[in-house]
Amino acid sequence: MSEMPHNPVRVIEGRVADATDHNWVDRYAPPWTRPYLRLARADRPIGTWLLLIPCWWGIALAAGYEGWHWIDIWLVPAAAIGAFVMRGAGCTWNDITDRKIDAQVARTQSRPIPSGQVSVTNAIGFMVLQGFIGLAILVTMNTAAIILGVISLIPVVVYPFAKRFTWWPQVFLGIAFNWGALLFWAAHTGGIAFPAFLLYLGGIAWTLHYDTIYAHQDREDDALIGVKSTARLFEDDTATWLWVFLGCTVFFTGTAALFAGLGWGALIGVAGLGLHMAAQIKALDIEDPDQCLALFRSNRSAGLILLLGLVLGTFF
Image (cartoon, rainbow, N blue to C red; front, side):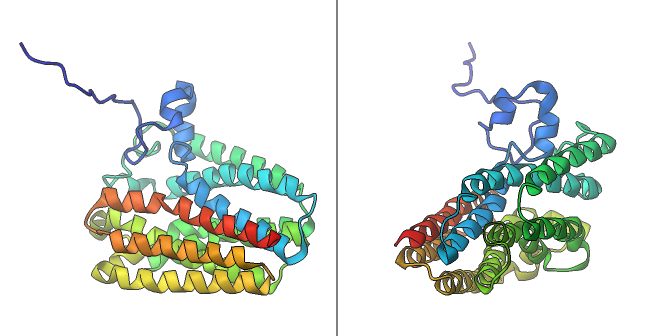
């Protein structure tokens, strides 16, 4: 008599290939909402964290520069809500523009548009809805933040096309994903100052680090269809470049903390971020897609280490 499998795998209809086994969308969301939540990457929350964390960095750095304000009680949750919906809108736009490419890459064929779960027309409507929610959050802030929020749409729109014309699309992702450091500094202070630009540059370097690791998952498929990335550009020299990005991240975030007048806690946070990135480089095997994904996801912890340091630096 044959035996039943000890740990049968639960097959979830429509689940995206790189979603975690226990994500809340596939387990708890009503079935009719799942294709749209997958389109917004709600089943893969790491991207929301990587968009949100620089926003919180900007608030903490600004608080160290000029003191905590009552408005921060709103800005902290506003950043979280805004990051969730705007990351969803950006990913929806990315999937609309990349639908033909995604259909040719093993990891992305299961995304809602190429797999037929969501039509392009419905995806556009969903993107607009998310954009309006983000706008509703933005207009509660000051004029400088609103202007920066409108400008942020430019790199968001351009990013999906960058891999078609440059080997450095990760730079465009960094420009878009770290914009919140500038926006929420402005939301706190009413303007932009030198420490905010330094923090922004540090965030871009951090994005180059983690997204190069991420891009190694698709390196072979990207080569077949002609999509460019830093992973394809660097190949076996990836670790060397990641050390460069680590150095830039530590330099710019550290000098941002010093120019903002933060205390020793901030520098401990910078060091912790650098050590976390170094551990990723030491562990990296660019031929192991699963490990690349795991290391990419670990950057939530790396970013939160710096955030904790910046917050401590405002008090000590």
